[in-house]
Image (cartoon, rainbow, N blue to C red; front, side, top):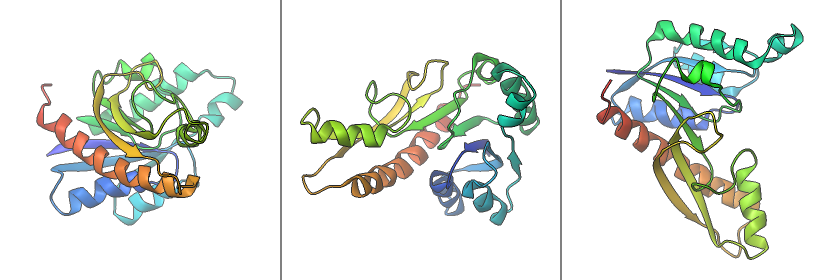
Length: 199
């Protein structure tokens, strides 16, 4: 059974998709720990309700103490290491992880991003895609799962899904369609990575 650690910053709908896939036996894995940098992240509640260990680990306390990002990343890595994860899944994690963290888990950290490769890098990707559509620049968007490297949303792509944008879409309908696609893609990519795991 492969061990997962999932990092979330928000409501945890992608975490829920992973939990559901495990629950029905579709995904042969176990979530060892759910980490959030936000105390009010509903993803922590989802994990607690499922009996999964949680860790609230805010960056703010480090900043307030005058510590830098690499110190936070190093300590976060140390917190995760005892769980010996085969894969660390960033499922709506809103922090950029530095090499100090990533080097501890080579090619074992994957991220979900709500845009296609090389499009709408960084935050607010769905809003920016919708804006580009309204300006006639694109007629579709999508989501991807990729390996995490220090450059944001630039790592090797594991899988993508194209999501069309329709003339009667507004931002909420597009967001819903992308999130539905994300849930399926993330689970499929985790399975894919686990199957081809060589370490």
